[in-house]
Image 1 (cartoon, helix red, strand yellow):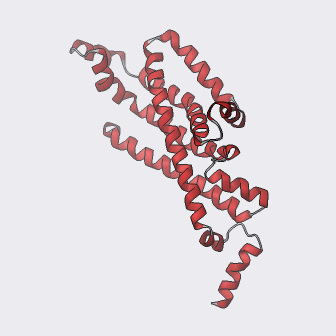
Image 2 (tube, rainbow, N blue to C red; image 1 turned 135 degrees about the vertical axis):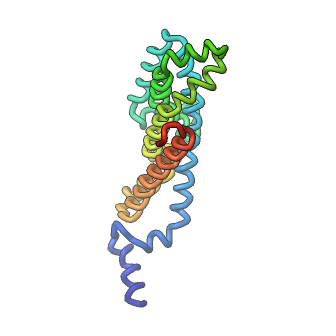
Length: 226
Protein backbone atom coordinates (compact mmCIF):
# COMPACT_ATOMS: atom_id res chain seq x y z
CA UNK A 1 0.00 0.00 0.00
CA UNK A 2 2.90 2.36 0.79
CA UNK A 3 4.45 1.62 -2.57
CA UNK A 4 1.11 2.25 -4.33
CA UNK A 5 0.61 5.55 -2.53
CA UNK A 6 4.14 6.63 -3.44
CA UNK A 7 3.56 5.87 -7.12
CA UNK A 8 0.25 7.75 -7.06
CA UNK A 9 1.84 10.79 -5.44
CA UNK A 10 4.67 10.74 -7.93
CA UNK A 11 2.30 11.15 -10.87
CA UNK A 12 1.89 14.81 -9.86
CA UNK A 13 5.61 15.21 -9.32
CA UNK A 14 6.36 13.58 -12.67
CA UNK A 15 3.68 15.76 -14.30
CA UNK A 16 2.01 12.75 -15.92
CA UNK A 17 -0.80 13.28 -18.41
CA UNK A 18 -2.93 10.67 -16.64
CA UNK A 19 -2.84 11.18 -12.87
CA UNK A 20 -5.49 9.63 -10.59
CA UNK A 21 -4.28 11.77 -7.69
CA UNK A 22 -5.15 14.90 -9.63
CA UNK A 23 -8.73 13.67 -10.06
CA UNK A 24 -8.99 12.98 -6.34
CA UNK A 25 -7.51 16.23 -5.09
CA UNK A 26 -9.12 18.54 -7.67
CA UNK A 27 -12.54 16.87 -7.95
CA UNK A 28 -14.34 19.95 -6.62
CA UNK A 29 -12.70 22.16 -9.25
CA UNK A 30 -13.50 19.69 -12.01
CA UNK A 31 -17.16 19.43 -10.98
CA UNK A 32 -17.51 23.22 -10.72
CA UNK A 33 -15.90 23.79 -14.14
CA UNK A 34 -18.00 21.05 -15.74
CA UNK A 35 -21.17 22.52 -14.22
CA UNK A 36 -20.35 26.00 -15.53
CA UNK A 37 -19.55 24.57 -18.96
CA UNK A 38 -22.89 22.76 -19.06
CA UNK A 39 -24.81 25.89 -18.00
CA UNK A 40 -23.04 27.96 -20.65
CA UNK A 41 -23.82 25.39 -23.33
CA UNK A 42 -27.49 24.88 -22.45
CA UNK A 43 -28.15 28.60 -21.99
CA UNK A 44 -26.54 29.41 -25.33
CA UNK A 45 -28.49 26.69 -27.14
CA UNK A 46 -31.77 27.85 -25.58
CA UNK A 47 -31.13 31.45 -26.66
CA UNK A 48 -30.05 30.28 -30.10
CA UNK A 49 -33.27 28.31 -30.56
CA UNK A 50 -35.38 31.26 -29.38
CA UNK A 51 -33.69 33.48 -31.97
CA UNK A 52 -33.49 30.95 -34.82
CA UNK A 53 -37.07 29.65 -34.86
CA UNK A 54 -38.91 32.93 -35.57
CA UNK A 55 -36.15 33.96 -37.98
CA UNK A 56 -36.50 30.65 -39.86
CA UNK A 57 -40.30 30.96 -40.00
CA UNK A 58 -40.00 34.50 -41.33
CA UNK A 59 -37.44 33.45 -43.94
CA UNK A 60 -39.66 30.53 -44.94
CA UNK A 61 -42.81 32.60 -45.34
CA UNK A 62 -41.21 35.70 -46.86
CA UNK A 63 -38.69 34.43 -49.38
CA UNK A 64 -37.13 37.86 -49.86
CA UNK A 65 -35.88 37.76 -46.27
CA UNK A 66 -34.16 34.40 -46.67
CA UNK A 67 -31.04 35.67 -48.41
CA UNK A 68 -30.30 38.49 -45.95
CA UNK A 69 -30.96 36.22 -42.95
CA UNK A 70 -28.59 33.53 -44.22
CA UNK A 71 -25.92 36.06 -45.18
CA UNK A 72 -25.99 37.85 -41.81
CA UNK A 73 -25.87 34.65 -39.75
CA UNK A 74 -23.12 33.21 -41.94
CA UNK A 75 -21.03 36.38 -41.59
CA UNK A 76 -21.40 36.19 -37.80
CA UNK A 77 -20.28 32.56 -37.89
CA UNK A 78 -17.12 33.48 -39.80
CA UNK A 79 -16.03 36.06 -37.19
CA UNK A 80 -13.26 34.60 -34.99
CA UNK A 81 -14.58 33.75 -31.54
CA UNK A 82 -12.06 35.91 -29.70
CA UNK A 83 -12.97 38.92 -31.84
CA UNK A 84 -16.71 38.38 -31.35
CA UNK A 85 -16.40 38.10 -27.57
CA UNK A 86 -14.32 41.28 -27.39
CA UNK A 87 -16.87 43.08 -29.58
CA UNK A 88 -19.58 42.15 -27.07
CA UNK A 89 -17.57 43.19 -24.00
CA UNK A 90 -18.34 46.95 -24.30
CA UNK A 91 -22.07 46.14 -24.26
CA UNK A 92 -22.23 43.22 -21.82
CA UNK A 93 -18.98 43.47 -19.88
CA UNK A 94 -16.77 40.61 -18.70
CA UNK A 95 -19.76 38.49 -17.80
CA UNK A 96 -21.47 35.20 -18.48
CA UNK A 97 -23.91 37.11 -20.71
CA UNK A 98 -21.06 37.90 -23.10
CA UNK A 99 -20.20 34.24 -23.52
CA UNK A 100 -23.83 33.07 -23.79
CA UNK A 101 -24.70 35.74 -26.35
CA UNK A 102 -21.62 35.02 -28.45
CA UNK A 103 -22.23 31.27 -28.45
CA UNK A 104 -25.92 31.78 -29.29
CA UNK A 105 -24.97 33.95 -32.27
CA UNK A 106 -22.59 31.26 -33.49
CA UNK A 107 -25.35 28.63 -33.30
CA UNK A 108 -27.76 30.74 -35.38
CA UNK A 109 -26.47 29.82 -38.81
CA UNK A 110 -26.52 26.08 -38.02
CA UNK A 111 -30.01 26.15 -36.51
CA UNK A 112 -31.45 28.49 -39.15
CA UNK A 113 -30.20 26.44 -42.10
CA UNK A 114 -31.44 23.16 -40.69
CA UNK A 115 -34.89 24.46 -39.73
CA UNK A 116 -35.27 25.97 -43.20
CA UNK A 117 -34.12 22.70 -44.78
CA UNK A 118 -36.75 20.81 -42.79
CA UNK A 119 -39.54 23.20 -43.72
CA UNK A 120 -38.50 23.22 -47.38
CA UNK A 121 -38.55 19.42 -47.45
CA UNK A 122 -42.26 19.23 -46.60
CA UNK A 123 -44.09 17.89 -49.65
CA UNK A 124 -46.30 20.59 -51.22
CA UNK A 125 -48.99 17.94 -51.74
CA UNK A 126 -49.10 17.42 -47.98
CA UNK A 127 -49.69 21.14 -47.51
CA UNK A 128 -52.38 21.12 -50.17
CA UNK A 129 -54.09 18.18 -48.51
CA UNK A 130 -54.02 19.92 -45.13
CA UNK A 131 -55.38 23.12 -46.66
CA UNK A 132 -58.16 21.10 -48.32
CA UNK A 133 -59.09 19.74 -44.88
CA UNK A 134 -59.53 23.28 -43.60
CA UNK A 135 -56.20 23.72 -41.83
CA UNK A 136 -55.27 27.36 -41.31
CA UNK A 137 -51.69 28.60 -41.57
CA UNK A 138 -50.97 28.33 -37.84
CA UNK A 139 -52.57 24.91 -37.46
CA UNK A 140 -50.78 23.64 -40.55
CA UNK A 141 -47.46 24.84 -39.15
CA UNK A 142 -48.01 23.21 -35.77
CA UNK A 143 -49.68 19.96 -36.88
CA UNK A 144 -48.11 19.28 -40.28
CA UNK A 145 -44.98 21.26 -41.10
CA UNK A 146 -43.29 21.30 -37.69
CA UNK A 147 -43.43 17.50 -37.13
CA UNK A 148 -42.10 16.83 -40.63
CA UNK A 149 -39.33 19.42 -40.24
CA UNK A 150 -38.36 18.17 -36.77
CA UNK A 151 -35.72 15.59 -37.84
CA UNK A 152 -33.72 18.18 -39.78
CA UNK A 153 -34.12 20.74 -36.99
CA UNK A 154 -32.94 18.23 -34.38
CA UNK A 155 -29.94 17.35 -36.52
CA UNK A 156 -29.03 21.02 -36.56
CA UNK A 157 -29.47 21.24 -32.80
CA UNK A 158 -27.14 18.29 -32.29
CA UNK A 159 -24.45 19.88 -34.47
CA UNK A 160 -24.92 23.21 -32.67
CA UNK A 161 -24.64 21.50 -29.27
CA UNK A 162 -21.32 19.83 -30.11
CA UNK A 163 -20.00 23.05 -31.62
CA UNK A 164 -21.09 25.08 -28.60
CA UNK A 165 -19.36 22.74 -26.14
CA UNK A 166 -16.11 23.29 -28.04
CA UNK A 167 -16.50 27.06 -28.46
CA UNK A 168 -17.47 27.59 -24.81
CA UNK A 169 -13.85 26.98 -23.83
CA UNK A 170 -12.92 30.28 -25.53
CA UNK A 171 -15.02 32.06 -22.91
CA UNK A 172 -11.98 31.85 -20.67
CA UNK A 173 -10.79 35.13 -22.27
CA UNK A 174 -13.55 36.94 -20.32
CA UNK A 175 -13.18 34.76 -17.23
CA UNK A 176 -16.11 32.42 -17.91
CA UNK A 177 -14.93 29.44 -19.93
CA UNK A 178 -15.96 26.49 -17.79
CA UNK A 179 -13.54 23.70 -18.59
CA UNK A 180 -11.70 26.14 -20.83
CA UNK A 181 -10.49 27.93 -17.69
CA UNK A 182 -8.78 24.73 -16.52
CA UNK A 183 -7.31 24.06 -19.97
CA UNK A 184 -5.92 27.60 -20.17
CA UNK A 185 -4.54 27.47 -16.63
CA UNK A 186 -2.99 24.06 -17.22
CA UNK A 187 -1.32 25.23 -20.42
CA UNK A 188 0.18 28.28 -18.73
CA UNK A 189 1.51 26.13 -15.88
CA UNK A 190 2.47 23.22 -18.16
CA UNK A 191 0.24 21.03 -15.96
CA UNK A 192 -0.39 18.00 -18.15
CA UNK A 193 -3.02 16.26 -16.02
CA UNK A 194 -5.18 19.39 -15.83
CA UNK A 195 -5.06 19.99 -19.59
CA UNK A 196 -5.84 16.39 -20.51
CA UNK A 197 -8.58 15.90 -17.91
CA UNK A 198 -10.42 19.12 -18.80
CA UNK A 199 -10.11 18.36 -22.53
CA UNK A 200 -11.42 14.81 -22.01
CA UNK A 201 -14.37 16.16 -20.03
CA UNK A 202 -15.18 18.53 -22.92
CA UNK A 203 -15.25 15.58 -25.33
CA UNK A 204 -17.35 13.51 -22.92
CA UNK A 205 -19.83 16.36 -22.47
CA UNK A 206 -20.17 16.82 -26.24
CA UNK A 207 -20.76 13.10 -26.78
CA UNK A 208 -23.26 12.92 -23.90
CA UNK A 209 -25.28 15.89 -25.22
CA UNK A 210 -25.27 14.46 -28.74
CA UNK A 211 -26.53 11.08 -27.53
CA UNK A 212 -29.16 12.75 -25.34
CA UNK A 213 -30.47 14.85 -28.23
CA UNK A 214 -30.41 11.79 -30.49
CA UNK A 215 -32.61 10.00 -27.96
CA UNK A 216 -34.99 12.97 -27.84
CA UNK A 217 -35.11 13.02 -31.63
CA UNK A 218 -35.94 9.33 -31.84
CA UNK A 219 -38.61 9.66 -29.15
CA UNK A 220 -40.18 12.68 -30.88
CA UNK A 221 -40.22 11.05 -34.34
CA UNK A 222 -41.45 7.48 -33.79
CA UNK A 223 -42.64 7.24 -37.39
CA UNK A 224 -39.02 7.28 -38.58
CA UNK A 225 -38.11 4.15 -36.58
CA UNK A 226 -38.51 0.71 -38.07
